Image 1 (tube, rainbow, N blue to C red):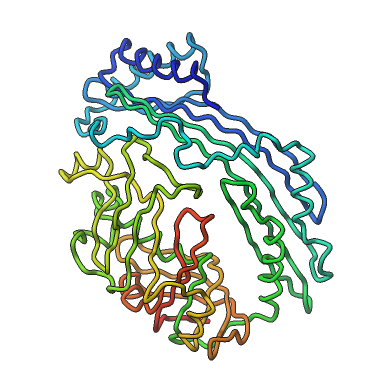
Image 2: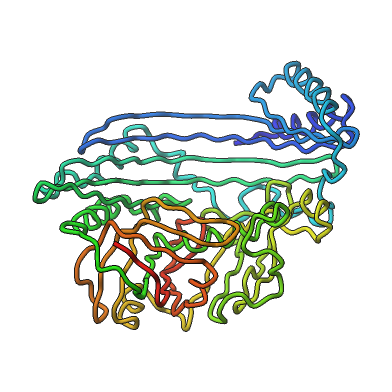
Length: 440
């Protein structure tokens, strides 16, 4: 999508910044396009087309830093914009920790943008009629008389970006995406129950939109007659669809910003065994053909496979160039690009097998509200799911709270499956924890 002329224009923007007085600059050109068809109760409800082109500039001026963006990409307009941005940057306080990353750490192998095979040319062949047909065929509204409403959205998009800086960086990322999500509401005994499911892929052929309606309906019908279980301690099996809720707070606690602000329950944790040996989390950012994979972060720093937690030992924080300079620590990539929880105690486990091994407990299929404390690691989440016994679902449960502390929760990890959904940004499988507090 980004043309050779636009690539030359980005290089020219960097020269404009230098000419205006910036010692260094980084420019990011982002181009995107999306088509969406929304359905309501089996009929087309809304059709949209969105297109965006924008340029972001990070300016380093006389020891000061400023970040700006514009979608006015004419040469004369951009020249005036950059000149004003440089002058605005001169008015902020000095911050010597703001620098470009070391060129030796930057990505050099993302030249075309599609090295990972994330662009599907099938999108170019889709017509508006094709998109409406896909959205309508995915609808499950007329398949079950218990359905009282259904809201679905099909969309396909293409994204292309290039990052350049005055140290010679030039890297590019391109990715297409095909998505479908649907929420279905059913009625039984005067009560309404809702279920949601979605799928996404960089490749059109891998999207199973029709299955989303079936799965959303299953989830809605499965909650009919739900009520709280007795308060107490249960083995908690967290469905792979929701399991990232258990991992995201760990990653946030390992962020350089959280560490620098003393706003983390994982302070001074690198090199320490704070988790059970069964837990290994890798960052696997370069999986060919898999959505969310990427060769570089927003600074242009090259990604690579690396352990985050290895057999229970914390291996790294996520520290960008700015935080590294402030904290006098070695920089890394700014965030986990594609975190993956490895299966344990063996490969091949799915939700059904984990429930069978656990015997009895609560299967959590949805979180609805709640919060966590980033300093202490304490959490309290509303949940929906199922009571299970002898590995089999007994009945649905709802209106319950799951509470605890992330460090003590992970200390009681009993299983991690091998069933992470590839459409999710975090590859987290079904997880099981012993003796978790639930209250109804």
